Image (cartoon, rainbow, N blue to C red; front, side, top):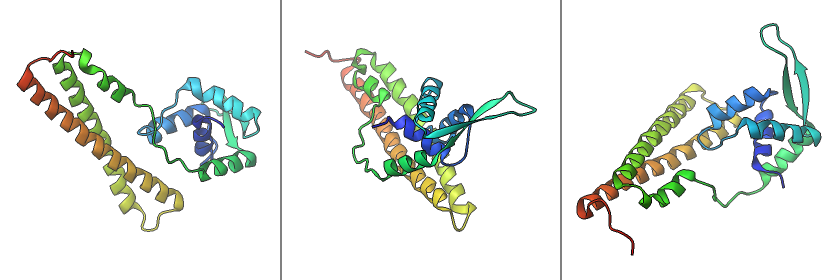
Length: 191
């Protein structure tokens, strides 16, 4: 079984041929709310996909930019991608570094934890605002969306629901922490 980064790159390349920089920008701008990738993951994964015949490389030159490798998904890559897309992913088990840090934040002063929750609240609000702008744009832009646009719209709706829940959670964290601080002061030591 391949790692999800491989399939993410195949998904991106199913839209159009791209170079590594373009793929990284795609992830950073479009998928950033639910997927991340580094250049350290990108290029080794592309090399492996090429070795396996799932992508091909074309060297392109440009009068205004240095030569670049453009990656194209092959039929074999498209077939494998479709097979992966058909598989159910029912377990929503993911790594959440912010939640891990929050879980163990009893080691920090309570005011710092409240500040962290406030920053999380502001961050989630910005993401929710961005999702809502995208949703409105998608709803008004085209009366009959393409299938790809429909899937993007549905994904955006999930992002809205998840960020509404994260926003509510951050608001409640602040309220609970401030209430705790008011009742008990800085801290009650674990026994």
